[in-house]
Length: 177
Image (tube, rainbow, N blue to C red; front, top):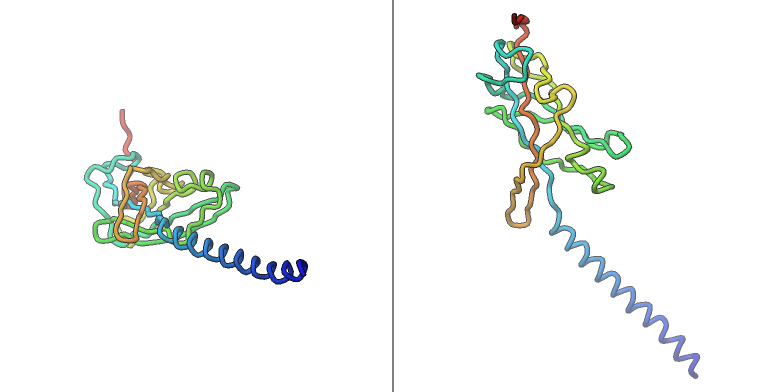
């Protein structure tokens, strides 16, 4: 009779354990959803004046509307793990959430170490040559400037890149004596 009781007790115990684990998983999933923090990149793209050609100076530079820039992130093995292109607004400003960015190795794949912003194109016919101001050609590293945005069920960590610049094609190289 004791063996029969154990036979009926075992499925009941398994059912209770299954319910307990599924409850834990759903609680864990809702906890993770609340703690989801969005990663955002911001910056400005300018048209560098000819007077500053060959330097990183942006004195007198004007923002470029609808300039195209891209964010490239690489994993800890150097492989591209994320890419997104986006446009600047009327003030040359870009603000883009990196939706879909996955960090498998939190410290090694962290946006500060793995992501850069690069210039792609300028719609301005008189200012569309790439410059390497703040590494706009090579890839401008991200900076954390302790900026966070939060609201109801929303939190974003904002990283900055640049400022970046295009330049006019008709600038001549100045020689300084």
